[in-house]
Image (cartoon, rainbow, N blue to C red; front, side):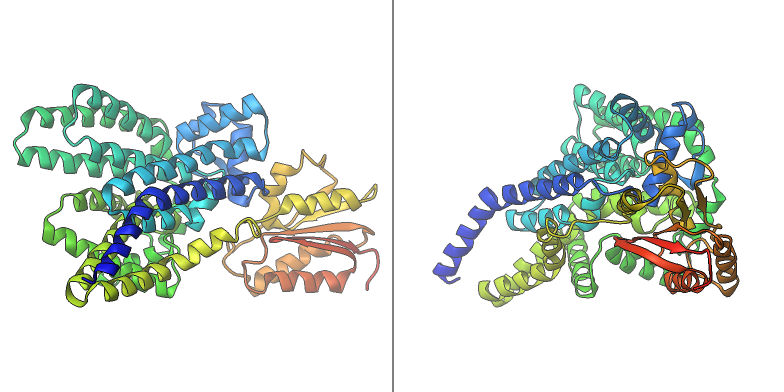
Amino acid sequence: MNPSIEKKLTGLTHFINKEILWILLGFSIFIRLFQYGINRALRADEAVLALNLIRRDYLGLLQPLEYDQVAPAGFLWVEKLLLQLFGNTEPVLRIFPFIFGIASVFLFFLIAKRFLSPVAAAIALALFGCHELLVFYSSDVKQYSSDVAIALLIFWLMTQWPQPTQRQAVILSIVGALSIWFSHPAIFVLAGCIFVNLFLTYRHQQKRHLLIWVLVGLVWLVSFAGFYFLTLRSSSDNQTLLNSWGNRSSFPDVFNPLWYYDAFTHFFKDPMNFSLPGIIVSITLTIAGIVAFIRQRDRRLLYLFAPVMMTFIAACLRKYPFRERLLIFLIPLAILLLAYGWDVLREWIKTRWGSSASLGVSALLAAILLVQPVGRSLALPFAPYYHTEIRSALDYIQKHKQPGDFLYVFQRGRYQFDYYADRYGYQPGQYQIGIEDLNDGRKMSPAEKVRYEADLDTLKGRSRVWVLLAHIDHVPDELEAVQNHLAQIGKKLDEAEFPSAIAELYDFSSQP
């Protein structure tokens, strides 16, 4: 190797080891704190979960939730307690997921430092810390942020203590038993990692540790049995949810090779959130990492692969969809694997074509992976993640409405409006919720267009009607069709647009 290149690489490694990882850690925390601080309006899924929290007591939260919502009991109980202690506001609802989001960054930081080389750890931490979904869900009233943090905690403890002392076994028992009540996919990580440790201890004939792992597993099994019979059993039979996920190829077609190809490649699109070049590079690096682990007989691959296998088995039993946001808890494991693959490929190129080629190719691959998430995160202070700003639309209506004004809420914003209605003082008779969507938000058929138009026609004769259109722009042609009909039956007097929400004022007292 050229001495000058070697010196530069040594200096770079030292800098990364001492500085970059800490900078990335701080930046990851900052963007989560900033996203939490913008205090965006609740989106529809958040609103319906919040409505369940508001309307039910602690025992009621053990029963199947309304609006086809599913969330672990521990998560719901903490959210309920926070609402009772600090009041019903968006920051209160989001503080628990936010804490988990920050905790996940620290846990991933610790794991990456121990699992990867300094350079690969920096790439992994940048991918994790700047991941759009992980940042968004760190301030979202859903359990996905806690799923990630709990999966990381379990992974860290199980790989840190493969031969636990009695004290460590007690800690593992308590953490595992509680995790089951706070995260549905925690059981897959627990089961996968304990099977690995049971296998390794049995293989090395470590009878004492084998007994310890059996006892720890029994504690987890008792906790899972209680959780399953008290709350999960009734939720797992929700046919509406099962059919919804089943229509998206979420359950394995075991004997169809195309399903495996689709599931594997789709994972890098959603939830990994790569664009096409990133998908190609990340798949290549993941395969390189798997091959290297197998050739080296590195047991760490077992820890990375086992939770995936347990999730797949649950999907085969149609108990857990193997698709999209429900696999968010696997993102950190996938990042570790592809970052390791990047390191392996870098070393492989170095031995064959030298340091210069290795540095150039590895830098290019890292850039393809990082340009999208890091670029988006750097822009976050100027363009935060919003979803459906129905609250901003209601603020505008509140500021400009006159006594006697009527409000029509297009049905896609009904649940968010249900949450905000009391805050803005709306009473029955002062508003109308639009007719329900028959196609569950997937398309607008000709028959449904007729239904919408007939429902809007009931507004005729009113002189001042505010029309609230929220979460309407994701169905092709729907917004245009609704606004065209409104223009046919009334005269628009005012309009204000916000992210995925529109407030419009019409006069329907006479034909335009």
